[in-house]
Length: 328
Image (cartoon, rainbow, N blue to C red; front, top):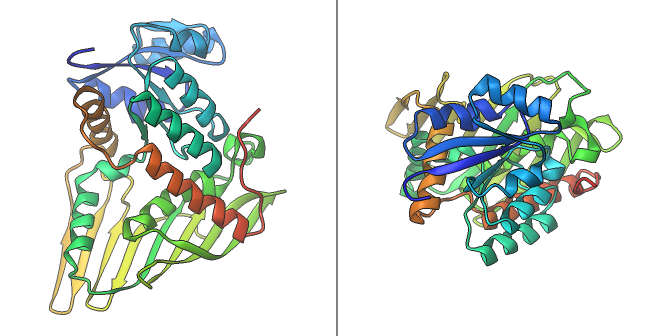
């Protein structure tokens, strides 16, 4: 590994083509070279479809491949921690899908292992690497909004397929895990919140199909975090921050390759900005390879993931639901 990162993929997840395979095709620093899935036939079919040169018979065999530098881990939530740890033990860098682990305690174990290894472990909050979020952070840090009063973040989408693994408690499922991890992460752009209360709508015992949480930040402003996979709010992907001197809104921060917009309203002006259509995943892959090849810092570290999972755990506890656990 000198000028590009050779990536092996765990599983044949639906997110993988958009998150890694397509961005790697246009990258000069990344290449997807291998895949392993629950069965060799499934892995072979996935490899043939997406032009991946090597197929392994097991996840362990993939981790042992000396021609693989880094692992992309899009497995179900409850397996993220286990296989990220296994990847680190095999000497591989890791790009791990969110949520990082099943809970904050497991995230702490993984973060400690990442620190001890010296390897790159990145939580795949792809939206954080897009210029639109860079612009939002510039607005926040500039102070033009004045003292903040309230922040609201939301990721709501319709998933009425209740057999989906995202509703499976044994795989650390639930709306707050799948959609809410984003909404929590977006809220944390404005500070580290403390959860005051939370209310869940349930699909089954302990499985939330929607969640709304009320939070407060150390600086005194309040917040609302909303997540849903099935509720009256069918589609809502947004960030809104209200300050004494203005307001900023971001519509669709997760997918700037589609319709997206950042609007800023101040006392004497209103502006609206759009950005290029290069996918957020492409920016994320660039950041990952820059970290691996050149040690460039990045925001969605394992330590940051511990903080994100701690908020998620606190929301579940405030809603009277159990914190998710790693899969057996």
